Image 1 (cartoon, helix red, strand yellow):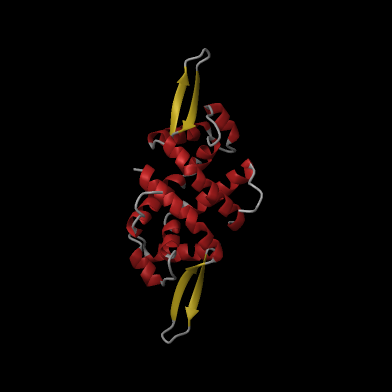
Image 2 (spheres, chains in turn red, green; image 1 turned 90 degrees about the vertical axis):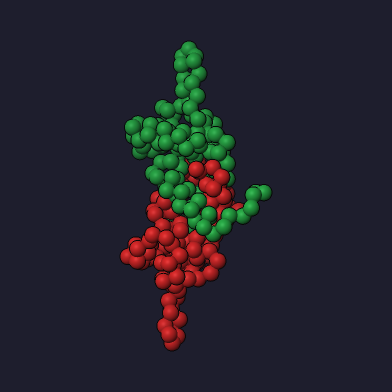
Length: 108
Length: 108
């Protein structure tokens, strides 16, 4: 990182925003699923245990509005829609990986 | 990290646990406040904008049960109680820092 270090206040505010967003059930799981490659709705729905289609659809919209994923349409035929990480979404992956390792080790 | 890399399933499960826990409002803020040094209840209550005493007390118990912070009593006089990060809590700090920088840059 080349930017100036965050002040304590900026850091607190940023952490609150991050966890209000990432803490919303499924958001982190959806991002994690897109880590390696783009995926379509059905693929995500199958891959994420226990998520309903309406909730998945809601989370995809909210991640898209936040600029973390992007929806692309391949006109085909057949038409296919897929979701992939944006640069902002991709930038989060190393931190998510770190948190996963930490949780695996320290959160029973 | 010297441990074997997490499988996809382990990673997903760990992330869900982490965000269910850290996503609970104030948990990350309380941990962040203890990053540099131990603090007492009043100090935390003043430092975290908008948290009520009963919620702070609840979060301190839950972070203590999870093994991320520890409560220590200095018999004084005067008696004083303070909270500090455990090794597990401390191990989370680099990832939290990374998430804060990411959110500052990418979450409006």
